[in-house]
Amino acid sequence: MQIIPIFLSFLQLVWLSGAEYSTQDCRELGYIKSQLMCSSCLNLDYGLEDLKEPCLECCQADSDSPVSRKYPKAILEVCTCKFGAYPQIQAFIKSDRPSKFPNLQIKYVRGLDPTVKLLNRKGEVKETLSITKWNTDTVQEFFETHLEKEDENDDKILDFEEEDYLKTNRV
Image (cartoon, rainbow, N blue to C red; front, side, top):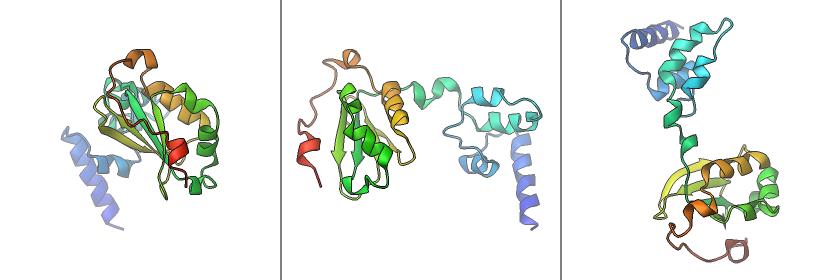
């Protein structure tokens, strides 16, 4: 029971010293540092002003946001055996929505929960995201936001595997 007040005192010391909170410190305060935009902290009003200062210590500037990054290619990896657990992902894959993204590859990997891998121009994976909690609209919106449009990346992307994983990698 005495650990909590000691920990809170420690956090207050860190905050008063002007040091930026660590990811763990922010998590303890209820913030996810990698996903918290400073513009969100500035909207804290109406009795939530006490949360504004630690929020600003845990946030990242909106201009540094991964949201602003676009990638030339993405791979959506999923296992058909898990479609029952992720019907929204199945609905996205089975619909015509993936055809709107020519630089999106759907890859079937046995036993894998749905993930998205974002690649650079050299085909190197730069980010990997779990999409287990996403719905169909969220998946589409993500690709609209993070994938370069076809005319933006014509002749820029190196040739990747031409195999159609929809046909060759079924489980």
